[in-house]
Amino acid sequence: MSFFRVRKSTAVALVSMMLLGTGRASAQDAVAPDDSNDRLVAELAEDENVEDVEQSEPRHASGIGTQPTGNSDNPPSEQPGAEPPTPPAEPENTETPRAIAPNIDLKEVAPLPEPEPAPDATEEQSPDEAPEPDSTGTGTPDAGGEPATKTGPLPETTGPVAAQSFTLLGKEILPATSTRLAWSPGIQIAGLSQITPVLVVNGKFQGPTLCLTGAVHGDELNGIEIIRRSMYDLNPEKLSGRVIGVPIVNLTGFQQGTRYLPDRRDLNRHFPGSPDGSLADRIAHSLFNSVIRHCDMLVDIHTGSLKRTNLPQLRADMNNPDVAEFTRGFDRMAVVHSTGSPGMLRTAATNAGIRSVTLEAGESLRIQEHQIEAGVNSLNSLMEKHGMISRMFVWGSPEPIYYDSTWIRTQHGGILFSDVKLGATVSEGQILGYVADPITNEQHPIRAGADGRVIGMAVDQVVMAGFAAYHIGTEAQIPGE
Ligand SMILES: [Zn+2]
Image (cartoon, rainbow, N blue to C red; front, side, top):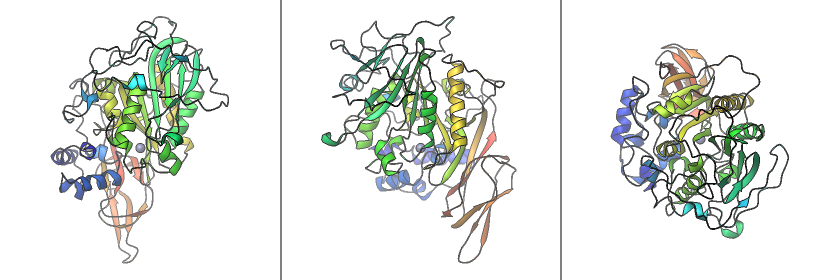
């Protein structure tokens, strides 16, 4: 069934593309919508970088305020996370006291965290049955920090209020400490099982919980470094709120240099997952319930795929007022509207009432200093605007730039040579690059369909007809203005 969740219906996809004025539907779009083989091919062939944008619903003209949390076009059943947030349940058992997580100075080199036997048994037992457990992760009803604010406004504290400990992955994390925990989705051969490190900084003062996820696609490296730099810079004595970072979500993909899971599925099409589905469903379910549900805000960090590169940018559902407001915290960042496909981590998290965006930066399999710096700056800006940290040096208060966007696909196979650079401003009709036929010597120019900016593009490479080559953003109105 999971294949059927990766896309909206063909009709919706086609309508979206018509509305966006982009070229043509791919062969997979046009035929055999019920053929799971085609869907697997489609799933493997392109990622959200292209399809997320092409299949997005248009941004509402008024920008914000017209749609509540949760996309109305999501499949009605089978996704527990798609239900609107409901009042908190009390999911945690209170019988066993939690082990206290060791306080580790994240600036020091420290041993890997110890695997926890059945680390999230208590956290995973209820989410599917119980409606939408609130998971501040408190070990006891009264002992665990402030209630999650989720969709509510930012906490406007008049002065710093002392934080309390909270529980994650079976460990109690005291205020003003940082630690490394172990998440294990429990899908590996038991004797060979590997843990996935989770970094946590619990601030001395109350505040929101920000979650950072990297390498959901195992070959996307910039996000790993963005999370390392952002988190290892935090001082728990000065932090208001908590930051939870999973630098490498897809550990097996990372080790093999591939975006996919061992079963060739794209993890970022399987959230919020299910405990008895495919491998991807199970991993997604475990991460979502053990970690993601504890977040008030989520930034899921990605890069372009298939030799495409992205200007640092957010992908955000600007039709969701909470998400639109959330994007304003990231300074100097391009923001591209995209409603997101079912199964994406940000879609599932948004549906669960967690303000979520995808942060795209650069290309896969590379470590890119400029992209990393932009990402770290943006996250620092976000934390400052939510009152979590104070920065010493801020130049003005730069605002994000909002874009509507379309992908331009090549009409011919051959070798792609670009005339423009990432970030370039282009005008309608301008030649962006050529596809050269290496045998016939034909040169096929590719032109911009509108005035705008190159916010994503393919690097020079061999392409087939239909390859998404240039992502052109046209400036849109800032929400709320
Ligand atoms: Zn990705």
